[in-house]
Length: 69
Image (cartoon, rainbow, N blue to C red; front, side):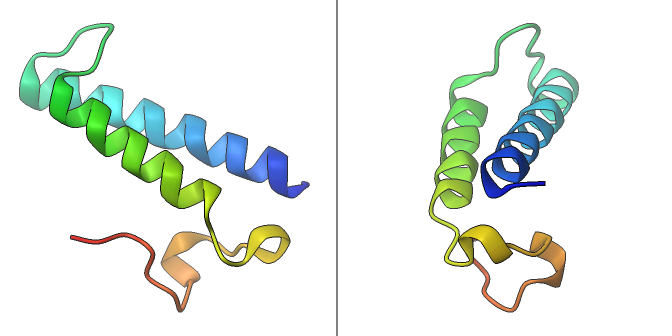
């Protein structure tokens, strides 16, 4: 899979996970709450700026930790 496809797939996965989390914990329905929207934007930005680009590993196998707490 090419990088653009991998990043796009990961963005969709994160978005789906955020919708599930927000619905369960914040009562979100079709739209995310403000905090979850901000977190999703942060996650998408991290994916866009991954230093490995074409050689991007799965985040749990990566030596660089792009996400802050």
